[in-house]
Length: 112
Length: 110
Image (cartoon, rainbow over all chains, first blue to last red; front, side, top):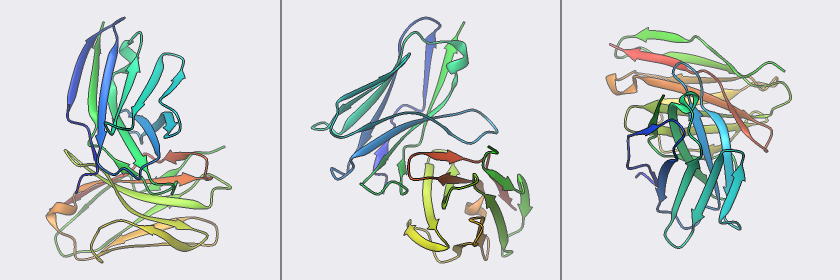
């Protein structure tokens, strides 16, 4: 039962352009969402989060948008850099911080 | 501060065997969560321990178990290994503000 879905397994973007990674969830009780970045042979590292009381959170080149009615969130990276090439996971939780449901990941390739 | 450490980093076992994985959280963190990562499935939550007690549990069979010690170090045990248990097992420690992941243990079951 995949409660968080990332339907694009991979994405290729030119350096300097915008990368948009998408994530859908099914459980309307989720109220806290995060994005993680993962390089090979390393554990995921936290990137940015958003709670359900907001619809946008920005941190430098990274912005997360939350559309609660559509149960959809997206991560925008502007401008994309080759060092952003990694697998990105979205995750959601239900007022229970330490039990997260993860998507299957999107592999982003930023071409120089 | 040292990060989350996991041992061993790589492990090869055969079907039917059992395995124990270890995770040392960041100093001061009392919560340790375990996740299984397989291709196409993303990270799936196994369980979370807080102050030596299992606080949350995912939907894995009873062959998967864990425990946490008084120093917050945690172990995960998988008994009667199956081929489908081959995966990257990640642990994450938390101070209830943010989760920090270890590098994972790559388990291969032959």
